[in-house]
Image 1 (cartoon, one colour):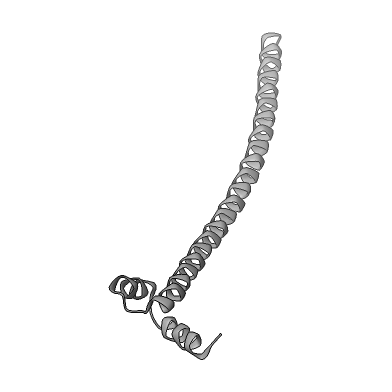
Image 2: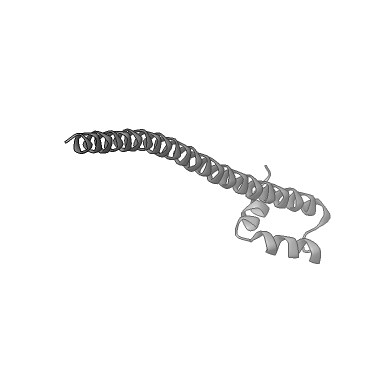
Length: 109
């Protein structure tokens, strides 16, 4: 790049995207500089969009991991609930059997 272009980019580096857009609208730069400034502004916007996409991807991955953890926890909870139901059913049958045996023993006594 030529020194003038380097100087232009150095000047643009200290400006915000909004300030550059206002400068373009106001005709601050000459025509040959204007194209470079437009290109610079487009590059800034592209970098901002890429950063936003990367952030959304990170959020999406975090959400995906949380969903997978929740599914694993729910699966374990379902397994434990099923086991508890089976054990309680067995205990209930044992109590009923004991009640019947006690009744029969009492009836024959």
